[in-house]
Length: 178
Image (cartoon, rainbow, N blue to C red; front, side, top):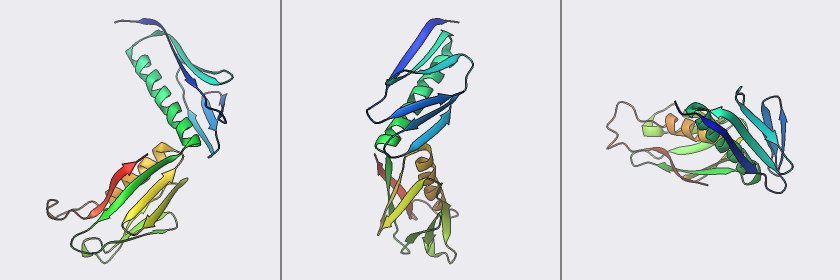
């Protein structure tokens, strides 16, 4: 097994973004809000300097190296979320029965999907906003995981069962994001 002596990664914080670390919970605050996430690992240390977050580990094996990269990606997503936010665009597609979509409480409601009488519902996770404008649906939020899970819930709610999916291509599909 190959062991690397030491690995150090540094993530610079943009202006207006602050970070605090208590135990293994990293909290990042920005103009759009605040996100917290736990990063527990006995071999990986996270430190906060004036304008940067340092992730370091000694005597690193392959798994720790991969986990450091994962920590860096999660922290970068948290920083992007509190500064810019995340937005996904979805499109309602139908050819057989006109689909009507709406938002009720914390559910995305799909009515008349494939002519069904009862509406299908997809859960909107807390902290995510969903807007419908005709055939376009916009899902926004500051936590990338919650926004992505909400989009997945909506796509899963319109999955076609017991029909040929080459013919019945109706549904609500992801078409773009930023």
